[in-house]
Image (cartoon, rainbow, N blue to C red; front, side, top):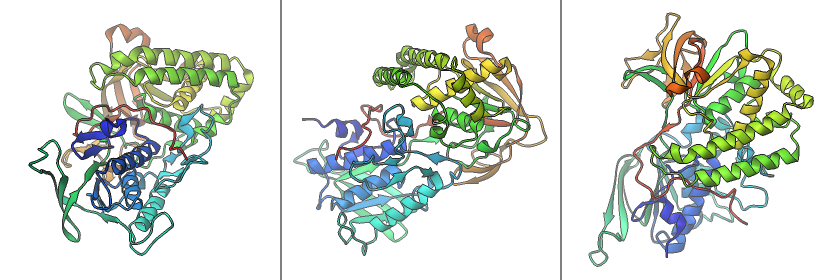
Length: 486
């Protein structure tokens, strides 16, 4: 008999990958990690005599490791960097809310994960700034791996071993001739740690080494012309103002739309925007039904990047049209428009969003709805406030002022500025003028969507993830629960 969880994450006998499937929110990573560990224990691939090795000390990896050790499985959490949760550690301007993007589900405003009434998980996730959460999670991980610390759920001594700055990692199957290579009895994991050589015969190995590098680049004729800070880098987007800044965002995923909402409302949390807008329950039901129908259809799109847009196209078109129908009705209400005026203020920061597709391709309903509501409201106020430019992409970008966008002394070249742990934490291009040229993605869309070339001094590039060479999985797109049952 097959197990759908193990089948979804297995890339080789006794090898599983939880970095790679989508969706990739922190809440979803936690759910994947706990569910996988429990299923591995059920089938006996890990137990008191068969250790678990987890590669990567991000949210997913740490959750899996703590969960396994709590279940009395000896566990090794191996991280190549100097500490855990470093992705979130620099994100001082990124506010994380574990439930807001479940909107319009009833629990969207709980602001804590696991949901109320659900059993606790290894890491506690309240709504908070990303960098502060990273500190809290580092503390929880240190307690879980402390041999002298115990709780009712985790009796001492701890079964969790955490190793940082791990190098020379190799994994090889241990074969019993009676079983054959398809059924290794264990995976031999070798590595070098701070304390010296490590050798573990693991019952299973979980890859949790991240989803890939964010595509924040503009490349022209093979040359890197511009790189913006990534989603997790610190930024100054909430503090922009109409007098000093002219903004361009490239991309229509959730990162792009989240940054747009932060810029135009000067608020870090989308729920804070939503609570200011009176929305009838009947309109919420329309959005809920449309999002559910679209997500069910898109979940069966091919993983092949050639066929995926074809399979998703009709669902995205229908979904955006439904949102626009609801938005049009709401904007006929003077109370709604007054609320939006209060949120945006009398002089909104000018923002243009360009994206290759004819529709928004983001995952979460809240970002889609608020973006369409605000952009349509601004467009009704003034034609010059048109924000969305589908079927349009950046053709070229060049600095107007005398500054260097790319530091070619880096290998590979990177944006000029201060870079720490791969994040641009001080961007030399911020606030400086760039002349940007645009082009239509489809020739027939020139008249409808091509944006006039012009100058921008804040440019945000959100083109999704450049995936790592993750091992192949049978299915990479999942419909996950909102939490684990009590």
